[in-house]
View 1 (cartoon, one colour):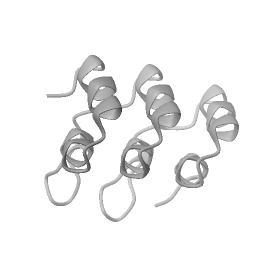
View 2: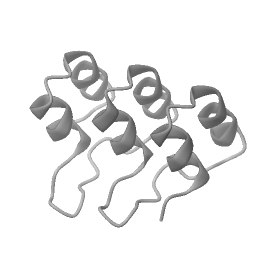
View 3: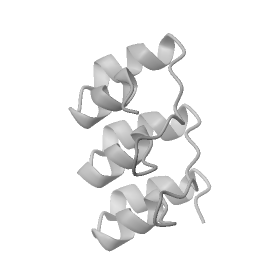
Length: 92
């Protein structure tokens, strides 16, 4: 389901997302599509949130229901800065 962290990322609230992570929010809880908060940040092209989630240890190679990873979406949307962040964080 959509957790408070997922909602904060979806609405691009960097400060709230940071606070939720500081309080131990789980980075890997996915919605019905298999999307974690990292997917939400990537799909919106929000570099600061993507950077935050990567630095906090988000699993960058998690596949969604269609077997796509955040990197696939970043590449398909032409989001070079986010592609580089994901690769630097270990995405294949």
